[in-house]
Image (tube, rainbow, N blue to C red):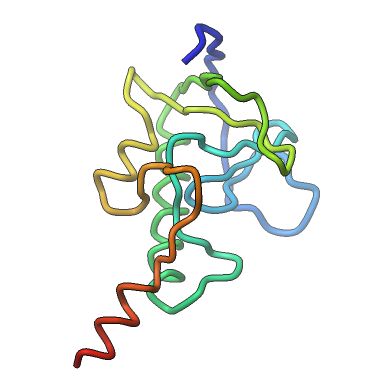
Length: 132
């Protein structure tokens, strides 16, 4: 991590329609004052186009949990080695009282550590249903 960190507090809602100003999109993406931010240290299940019912359900839980965490008080946005991703989103680790919100979501089973690519949240579920 670079030393660059910005401490903020904001009132978040769930994103719906546009414009998107300060709202949560899903478990790893939110808008802050009109800027789209991707949480750099995790991957959360998709809510927009989930691959299966399990991913949709887990994605909704992750989204609501991120909303609660961001609304729980001041947080910091820490810049890592890259400023933006290929979609133009700010890449930031989000911390609150010294703890990564991404790590909280991972510990609660609502996200996974970022490994450089998205995972298939449904793969294990499909294999389990075939075995039955």
